[in-house]
Amino acid sequence: MNRETLHKEILKKKSFLCIGLDTDMQRLPNCVKNADDPVFEFNRRIIDATRDYCVAYKLNTAFYEANGASGWHTLDKTMRYIGKSHFTIADAKRGDIGNTCDMYARAFFEAMNCDAVTLSPYMGSDSVTPFFKYAEKFSIVLGLTSNPSAVDFQNAKDQDGNDWFMHVIKTASGWGTADNMMFVVGATRAEYLADIRKIIPDHFLLIPGVGAQGGSLEDVVKYGMNKQIGLLINASRSIIYASSDDAFDSAAAKEAQTIQQAMSKFIS
Image (tube, rainbow, N blue to C red; front, top):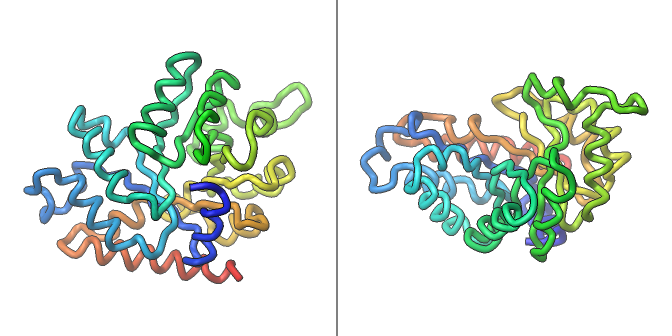
């Protein structure tokens, strides 16, 4: 899915919601635990219930890798079940160079046919640019994350006195374009969005932290929205674990619809 198609989907659904399928085996409702593949059954029901309210799904690969070979099978099945009606993100946070990076790109863009993958830019351009070989695919580069210890490195000062995350975003933005790169910027640090937009006015931003982590939708929109909306706001736990009973999918749909309705007010 390219940027124009993603934008059209946002306008059609009046939503820029991305739902994180960070499915934890320990939190599955009893009603799916006896399925042949409990995680996939949970994901399937969440997707069926919420697909009208979101434009993207993000699968954190750690929750699948933790289950070994069967977890990778579940990850692949879930991606295929979502299909191409939604923007699909492998939240893998990969970051390597050379042939290794090429193999990661093949894994997520060829074998799983994901639309995007999250990447760490710490090793420099070599860890990102190999992903640009794939047309209409996106590298989502970690820019400013929402975890408390992000300040250990991201808010260190560079030689010009700027926060290091600003240096990372400015440098990385020169490796690609708004058509093949996005950046992760945490919603819990929305006060930085205005300055970030001065550097990357056209790129889409993947924004975690709204919902269970307490980030403000209004602040993100105020400081981060651009002429193509330019935002994918991710919510995971607040939606998929809205209920632990047999009607967990209905509860997820209600929560997703509430967020979509809030988002619709910002889309003309």
